[in-house]
Length: 352
Image (cartoon, rainbow, N blue to C red; front, side, top):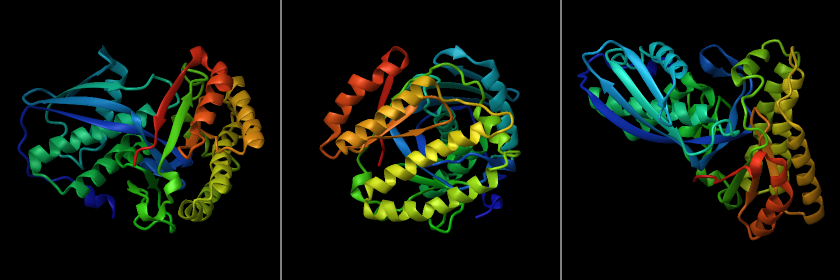
């Protein structure tokens, strides 16, 4: 498919309406870090969609008023975010020709703490894109559920790249790769369910809140620094290559190789940050202490507790429900929570 397949219908009838949608966040296993124009990823990525950590959004569209956007986050008006959404709506007008024909009042709320290492931009733009498609269905006539979801993923990507993965449950791929049929740079696609071993379908993700403040370098700036990173092209190639073993691992249930690959991807993401110009480090002392304790625990117990990292200090603890989870949870609470701010942890599971 091309961008032309998403051009909007010129015939529409608008009316004042309020819609509400919800969208979860996701955590990448093979990381996306670096992009081209129009939010095209420099390499393919694959993520797990979370279950409890989501954004709930209501969008009121008011006709007979000039185009403007008013946004409220947890009841508090956010002017800067409204400006960002206005710019986003103007950028996607060709895909939704009615979008600038009224006023918007958007009220959004996250079920997880702000700045918690859970991608609120992914769940946030995913929810907004779903709201827009609900309005589009009302104004122009409903598409099939599959078409609507794909276009919502396409639109979400233009707001926040990784948001396109949040529109689907389970494992989701964004970025063209020969290893996944119908994968695309333009939208996310679900990884084939029959290609996933049962061991990967019942997973926990506990997020340790090592640092809850604003990051020293935003993800947008971090992506931009890949343009001059001397190791960028090799990193993009490695991510593409990693889809080959990942496909084998997901099929045969090889937990040991899965752990090694996921942790390597997480550390490579942060290595790219350290090798940028200027260099930056988003991990904190607590991040490193947790990682070392996880490695010690795994060596001593052989239990499948491992980690991944987003573009921040907080640590996503991954472990399956396979009979050993109670021992793992006890270890987390006894040994790892002490490295967080205020014993902060967000407990979630992967959504299939």
